[in-house]
Image 1 (cartoon, rainbow, N blue to C red):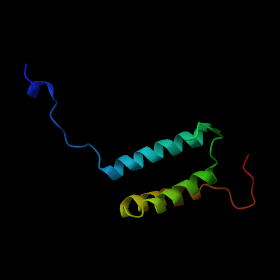
Image 2 (cartoon, rainbow, N blue to C red; image 1 turned 180 degrees about the vertical axis):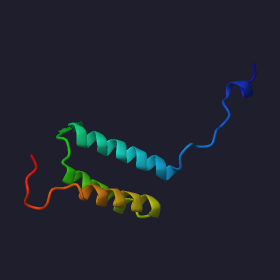
Image 3 (cartoon, rainbow, N blue to C red; image 1 turned 30 degrees about the vertical axis):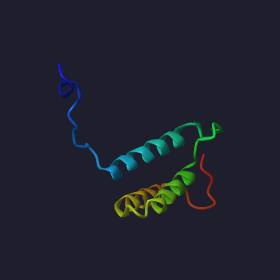
Image 4 (cartoon, rainbow, N blue to C red; image 1 turned 30 degrees about the horizontal axis):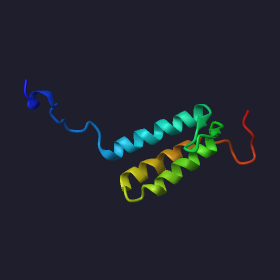
Length: 93
């Protein structure tokens, strides 16, 4: 067996870089909305509220402004999620 037989042939990516970033951030956001999580400093953080999730999506849309389609997708998801928020002044159960 020679080295050429051992090294796997490089395959094209299944997803674009933007799609990978979108999936990564959405998986993290989903995890943070569902349960407590540990931040980069090792601190235990409470689960995010829906309002905080919307804010994070808008922040991501700004952070990725050099990727216009990705930024648009984050802004779109933030707007859709914001529609599920209770009206201002109304406390959710």
